[in-house]
Image (cartoon, rainbow, N blue to C red; front, top):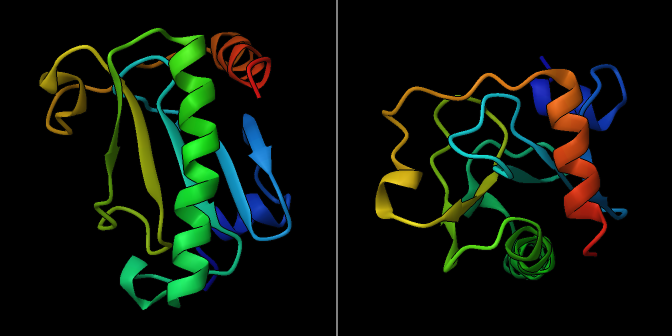
Length: 130
């Protein structure tokens, strides 16, 4: 069965797209920890990130680096945190999270519930820095 992320890649479920190429997709997390929280995924469904071949994994992080630079400009912060958890969706993904404090990347915190309009605005702001 296709993961929710594969359904996003296939256009079956909408997303707030940040950046895309033929192998990777970056889009906003709809339940973010902070504004600008973005997910980077490979378009090919792989459950465990370390099952991705070395070249693709390296390219995925280079792709994520470009997205992180745009996030940092859109939401000025000392760093964009990186997290790979992979338990909630069986499709490898990288969380990119603007951080002012280590608590900004604490996944046990309550998630934000932005409106569709807020997500559209956040995506547009980040894309403007690509």
